[in-house]
Length: 420
Image 1 (spheres, rainbow, N blue to C red):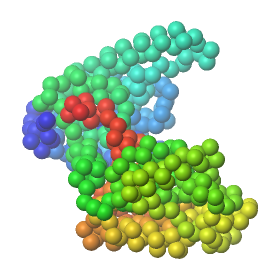
Image 2 (image 1 turned 45 degrees about the horizontal axis):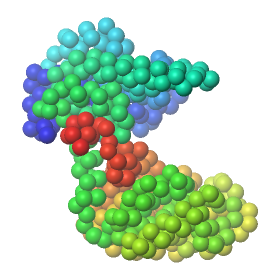
Image 3 (image 1 turned 135 degrees about the vertical axis):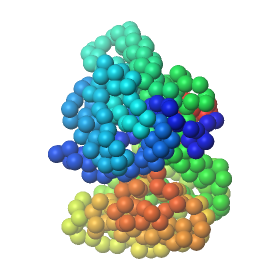
Image 4 (image 1 turned 60 degrees about the vertical axis):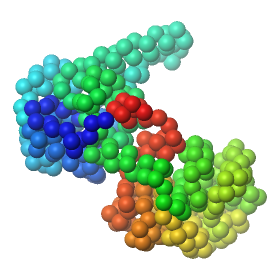
């Protein structure tokens, strides 16, 4: 497989699929440019070699052309970070895009308008009536799949080489993330630096594992993490359950959880996961105490209570000090660490202590030589909030893509380039 370091982009036009789906405020100012900055090394490599760059990305979830989601809003920041003027095509498939791509010269950059302005990017029909028949739905889906292939073909026609640097969308079989690769031979399709780093980080955790291996899984629902938990139970030495999931496990074990978040229909599932951990000799680590609140508010009254004795009308919003110590001991004894999900409602400063303690323990373990991978939106927000992102081994830009990769699923954006 071709690699970006070995590829010479001189005289080449590169279509680079990036993930510039960045948050904007009401005045369309970028509030976090992490995803743009992450792709800059790839773009600069192409330009420094003497190639030209055609940037494709999505922004938001538009249901058609919508100025609110125009990539024009982020052009100034892209230009500033690259240090070159950036051209813009106001339609990724229109005549303007075709003409501007055709005349692009070495060292020049063209940004195409939001790829998701077209339903064909995702290959999903839009605007179907709610009462559409199964036959109508099938026909619409078939037509949109054909449109998707045509869109991929046109995007590919702009360039001589395809570079995928959008790990955040690697789990989607979209026109620009997977299907486009069919139009380039093996030597002219490759991963960008960000994509390759993401793949290397996950595979280091899952395939080149230094032990003990500890995964910290947070989040509110067991149901949303079931696949990843089941996969990890065949790989890890320690699995720490945190966040809102704590209370589903606690109630399943007979504990009192007050008004804490809980999936009552997943109690048997929680018990089965506890048994699977035992069967696989995995140390399943659950909270022993909680910081409970009398309302879902940063200003709520609080008390530290045993996690299985939360009073009626109170709810657990973070782990308590005994659990902080318990988690930290496990983390600091680890050589490989995966963190996905905070321990509580970290957005409220009054309930960020547990997540901060976990982050600090991971930092200490990393300083002692452990490999730490942080991924998932809330975990990334945590390490950024606490100012410790640069002290982790790797912070992933992928949310759903990262989780599906860890679950062991095949990611279309990766398979399209390396074949598996």
